[in-house]
Length: 110
Length: 114
Image: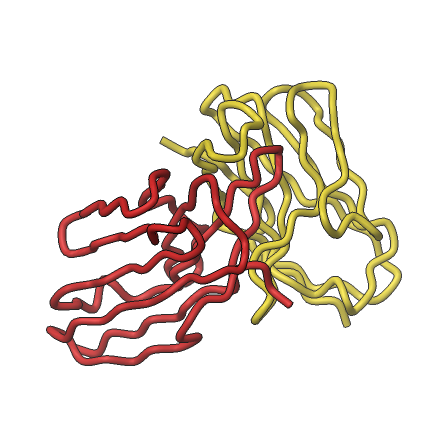
């Protein structure tokens, strides 16, 4: 059983559509990170959220941290083919270890 | 700006062969990490090095060894490769081994063991 459950596992949409992907756990997070991994490359950090209820925006991407700090969502407005990739949420445990979810694989068709 | 460089990018081995995956970072980071990524499993930590001269086991260390050669370089060795070690391996680094610091990843080594 994954500590971090990401949904959906796979999403294929048309350019211009909006979408939301989710990261859930039964544990409370001190903070949570979102990474994007493009095909053939390593993950790249997009954002870190630390406060319950926090909302951060990065251009067309909106990240929300749940009030109870057990879940997070990533909303993309007007998706573009360049948004294609694997979106990973990650839980920094406070020690040396970061726990990663299995990811949501997004494909945006032109 | 190279960041984190991994070599080789691809490798095919036969069961029982050994090999070393190389990783180097040019960001003067203290901490380095090795992960494996398998479908549906996410990234799993194999070993990490909090600072030069130290290494520690992560979540899935069996079958692997590491060497922190200097501040820049952190290698991963498979002594006797097994098909279960077929995976994509990522090296990462961060300024300090505090887990909410951003980790910078290389582009991975795709390893197949027959």
